[in-house]
Structures are given as C-alpha cells and as structure tokens.
Image 1: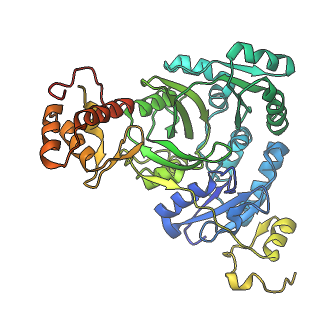
Image 2 (image 1 turned 180 degrees about the vertical axis):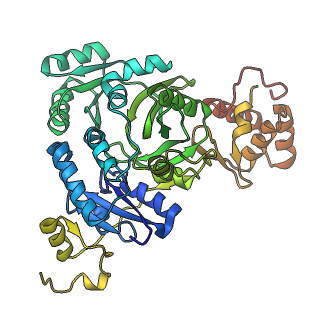
Length: 364
Length: 89
C-alpha cells in the first residue's frame, strides 16, 4: 500500500438525491493528498462516482444492507483481502444498523470506524425525536406515526393542512389536502416501508448544521448553513454557511444529550421572531459536507482522526458566507468498466479512460 | 431604534450586503448604502436625511422613501423599529 491509509467510503452516487460519499472523499483528498487511498463501495454499477476522475482509487460493489450483517461483513472481508482497509466511513442511513453490528468484527481485522452506538441511533430516530427534543429543551413539531389508512385519515383533523409526511429513514413530502394524502402515503410506504411519520407543518426557514460528535458529549466541530437552492425533491442544490451561535448551541445540546459518536446533520427550523424547532437528525454527514470543508472545518478528516487515533483535531469556527452551487456533469466509462463491476464486483484500480477511448471497440 | 443586527452585516463598497446570521444577501443602491452605513454607525435618521439631501439629487418624497427603507429593514428583521424616527418627519 506504499504507506497509504486505505479508507472505504460508501454512498458515492451524485444523482437527483445526492449522497454524501463524494463530499467526504473530496474533503479527505484535500487534507491528505496521496497519503490516502480511497476505496469506493457502490451498490450499483451505475453509481456516478465510479466513473468520476480523481475521486476513487479502487471500487467494489457491495450487497445492499438488507442482505444482512453476515453477508455485508463477508463482502467487506473479501475486499479487505484485496485492498487492506484501515477504516470505513459509511455515508447512508440504512447502512448504519448493519455497520454498528459488525464494527467489532471489522475492528478485529484492523478496519476501524467512528460510529454511533445502537441506542444512540434509536434515540435520534424520527420516532423518538419528540422525546429527545424535550430532553434538550428545543421545541419540535408535533409528530405521529402512521401505520395504515385509518391513522392517515385522522391526521388532517389532528394536524391540519398542510402537514409533512416522512419516510422512516429519509424522504418527506408536504400533504396539502386529503386528496393528496393517500397517494403520498402509498408512494413513501412503498419506497421506505412503515411506519411513516406525520409532522405538523411549521412556517419558517430551515437551517442545517453538520456536526462531528466525539462519543463523550463533545462536539469538535460544526458548521451551519442555509439552503439557497432546492431541487424538486427538496434537496439542497445550493447553500451558504452562516454564523448563528444559537443554532450551533442547539446542535451542541443534541450531540451532548445523545453522546453522539461520528458525523451527523441536525435540521432546525427558525420561525420569524427567532423561535427554533428541531426537525430531524440524520445519523451521518450530509451530501453538502464539502461546504463545511470549504469553510475551513474538515469534518470528514476529524471523523477519520477519531476512528484511527481516538481524537479529533480542534477546529476553528467556520467562515460564514461560503456558498456552493452543485454542478452536475457527465461521468463516462466503457463497457469494460461495467463488465468488471458486474461480473467481478470490482473496477481495476485505474482512473477512468481518457475520453478519446470511450468510443473504442469493446473487446471483452 | 435597535440596529444591533445591522452591526453584523457585511456590506461591500458596491452595495452587496450579506447577513452572516441568516445567510440572506441583499443589494442596495448608493442612497441605500449611505443610509445603511449611517445606521451601522449609530447615526440618527435625521443625519441620513440631511446627507441624502446634500449629496444626492433627491425627490420631494425623500423622507417617505427613507421611512420606507427603514420599514424594509424592519421587515427583513434587521432593525427593531421601536422608537419614532426623530427628525425625519
């Protein structure tokens, strides 16, 4: 490995619903240069970062977390046999329960991680948000679990319209009237499973804080931002860093209460007049994590240090007024790349071919 | 008038204004920039009114315009307009 630190990173698709992996990789590359070897773990041969130049050194397909901890561990050990890994940074919500379960087994073979504990994951879940918000002294919109059509029908009267219907892991849509409720319920339930959560709609501006928790109640770094451009799915396409001590303090209380270990995103909403609501806690870095790095707070680097050395660097406050606009572009590959990924589960550790070769004859 | 929030604003010489607490940005023209900088320095509106009248070719509605500008700042939650605008009316 030529003295390189090999880091496996998941969540590497930058599509309509962008994943955090590429932002994590860029942050690590910027800080560590060639001393880091990035191993991309993909769930699909068409995950965009597989073909992006300068992001990944190696790439492997892994089974979906729904395959279970045993299958997931087995695949990681196979990869470890080919590219000895020093650490893994999972970037998707659904991976975390599996990774938490196999983290000791991974640690025993030298693959370190910085993950929350199982109970921390549960305590920050949408179903327990009200309880957590009360504990940290922040309001949260009234929220109810929805398991079936019957409880869905009652929500309009109970919360009034509009209200927000959320998937158990991610995704949310605004329900503006009874006519929309059933179709949104069906769409979210099919995609994410039950229970869904119905949340009272609060008028205000949303602010997000990306945080790193040290597992002992400390928060070595955090950066707050306001979304400036949204996609049709409500995902941030552009954002700007801000300097709001109240939001950082609210995030700090959440991290302290949970004794959170690892990266996370605290979503807050500020009503006109300043009142803050806790909306959600995502248990991993958000897709916009590179904005924090650009503002001077490299949280993925901090997380890696926590995983490898047990302590994070001390960060200075982020620079406000740093913004990003996501830039969508095409990544290109050849059939040989897809062939390797689909049939062997890996892409040879070589950058994507130059564009001139893309049209060359496919010779398997 | 409580102008505490104005102190935090980053204001460029060309009139680009950024509020680091909320992430909102605004643009102001030359007259707006003059008033904004006066308010940031803690000057009363009467000073701004005199400055506008002496430095710009002001219309007769300048007083109303000044008050509308302050109202806009208030709507953006940048000033707490609790006191009467002494000398501006």
